[in-house]
Image 1 (cartoon, rainbow, N blue to C red):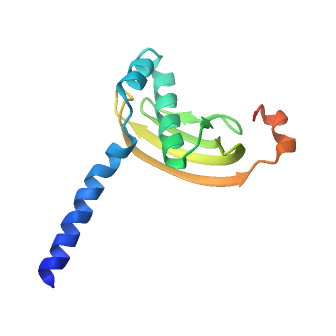
Image 2: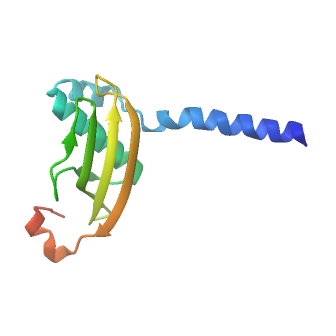
Length: 126
């Protein structure tokens, strides 16, 4: 029984070690990010991470408030994301490597759906 438990723990650890790779970006995306200014690299990499984790097709970090940034970290408390044609509020914190290509930490909180009648006010689109 203990041996079975040990194997299960090793399997879980192996899966956790692979988890960050699930959100790795491809070479074409890396090439595009590298062409941007550093602050834009940070924003794009964190937005891509949010899109991957939320299964969203668009993330905007500044809809309800300006993100707070350092050289490799962004707090986007007033963000939004679009999923299946609907917009939702989003708050996230993202830290990347110095080159902005690797996400070191990412936490987020999904918010309420934004009513269609408010989309124009916040410059959101279908």
